[in-house]
Amino acid sequence: MPAISDLRDAFTTHFGVTPRLIVRAPGRVNLIGEHTDYNEGFVLPIAIDRCTFVAARARPDHTVRVFSANLAAEDSFSLERIEHSTTQPWGNYVRGVVKGLHARDLPILGADLLIKSDVPIGSGLSSSASLEVAVGYALQQLNQLNLLGEELALLAQGAENSFVGVQCGIMDQFMATLGRADHALLLDCRDLSYTPIPIPPDVRVVVCDSGVRHSLVGSAYNERRAACHEAVALLKTRLPRIAALRDVTAEQLEANADLLPPAVLPRARHVVTEISRTLRAAEALEHGSLIGFGALMYESHASLRDDYAVSVPALDTLVELARDLPGCYGSRLTGGGFGGSTVSLVSTSAVASFAESLAAQYQARTGNQATVLICTPAEGVSRVATF
Ligand code: GLA
Image 1 (cartoon, rainbow, N blue to C red):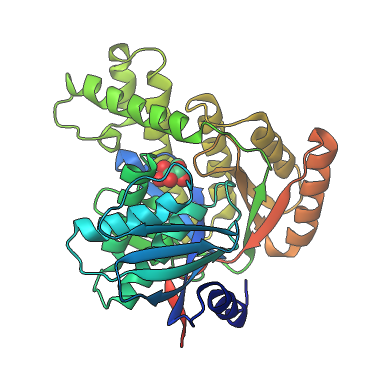
Image 2 (image 1 turned 90 degrees about the vertical axis):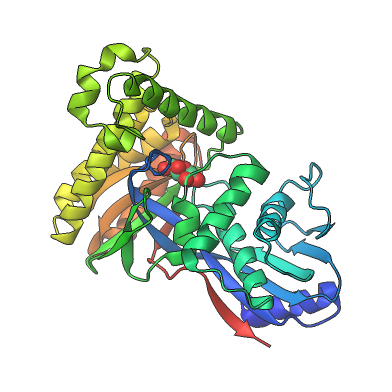
């Protein structure tokens, strides 16, 4: 985590004035419930102790200046004319959030913003959602707006959907906003109600970044989402009351399989079975059944690999290696897929040797360098300093 005084000094050096406040918003790792959020299903993520920080100060005019300390790059735009930037793609996360505030008729002044993140970028830990939420919260605080947590999450999701062009669901932005320390949240993505479930102290959540990145994440993601829509439209011809795959049982899907093209059926099967797995996993966690929980994680990975086709060999290798290590209850790819990270649930007493062996064996097997993070479930967005 960057020191608050370093963030303040970096802001002052760049903008020539001191910031008024600093906020933070966390990344997230999803324990189970993948590609279910945009099907109005359930997810079970934690917010993590890796954050995007925004140091901010209002300006008297209508200009927003944004400096990314990670990229050493600046973006600048006027509140009167917020357009998609082709030269500074990272700036679109900020532009999208500001545009969303405008679209809601919320009165805001211009601002100077300095961004610094320790959420690894592109590793499936939602660095973009943490950026969107941190910027939205900083502007809310500077302008004394009253956006509730849920509204802030929806604003941030809207920025990604309409401005960045990824038709993501609500999970990542919701966790960046409303994550709870020491807990996972069982989130119902249909009505945004949620139940916090404690993570027992005898297990740790371990993220392993494969180092593999996929450049087509956005388009492949949108394609999966389109397949789910197609499945619902076709199933509706016989099941007129369904609104989303959330409303379809595994038996109904089986009985109506003839309606779906061969490429669409496995996609729908993943979603339907994953929603049921997520509910069972939440129950297992509540009852302290870590073995039961872990078995569902392995099933989830197999379904993402075989039915949803979003895994890559590096992620499959990481899951296989984790499965054979002492103390590992379960492991699976986490986030959108096509590269990025796996998440494993590991007994606290074995976690240090697990982390070391997983990275070493992965490198020996693939030649790739993995980065392992042992995560602590963290609170959602908050203000960390006022000057
Ligand atoms: C990305 C999206 C989320 C969710 C996951 C897959 O992280 O941003 O909304 O759909 O993929 O579960």
